[in-house]
Image (cartoon, rainbow, N blue to C red; front, side):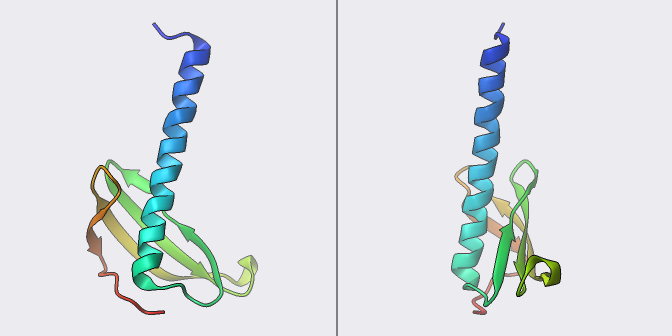
Length: 92
């Protein structure tokens, strides 16, 4: 049975892996879409298993930011996008 420090280390590793995968998915969307002017943030949370919601926020500052693009994605185990609702097409 793992000790408390081992469990904490495992928990931290899993969190890091989730954050890394979310960043990878978000970067792929921006690469395909193009970088919008006034990009504030790319948010790519994992919803469940290999499904993500990616929101592209734009604006002159966070208070006036808005979602310019939003996609529901399925990715493979390596984080490669295999399906997207809406289709991601170059816009910027």
